[in-house]
Image (tube, rainbow, N blue to C red; front, side):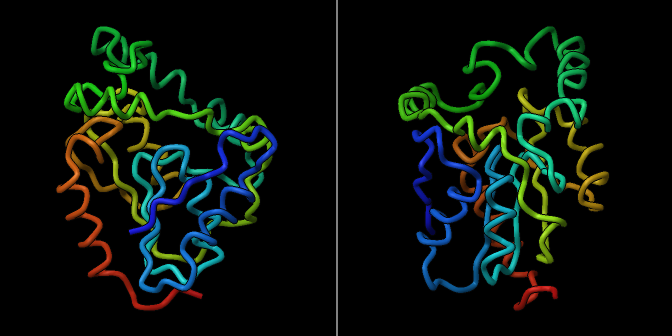
Length: 204
């Protein structure tokens, strides 16, 4: 497993710089499953376009469209109205300003506090403003993992957006937006399953 350290503290760095950092960290490793969580989907797809990836997995990932900047993504996808609708149903849990309510509600408190303590100034302003670099989605088998208790990205929002933008039906896992912390084994099992069923070569 490789967990790349992105140059997120540098406000001049772009999505291309983030992808460069991942490619460098991966080196010559083979049999790759690239996982992009949340904003990381913007970078993960760029990486999958550059490396021989067996499967690309978006975990509650922001699915970009060609030429769309992350800044534009929120309005283009109808995110804010989806949050408002779900907040009306759950009494304001979705979109709550308290990160322990909106992001970490099923993560053990000590672990959530540790994660909060490691947060960095990411993404940069340059990465948010620049258009996504690809002209089309990379020709790589792609899976989407939706978190059914996500209070940042409402599940129904992704149930609509994933078929619209990727043409696939998302898989679902019980858990919050930070499900990799609250249910790491379940996430790992799903990733292993994706790898086991993925073609051995890219789709070209």
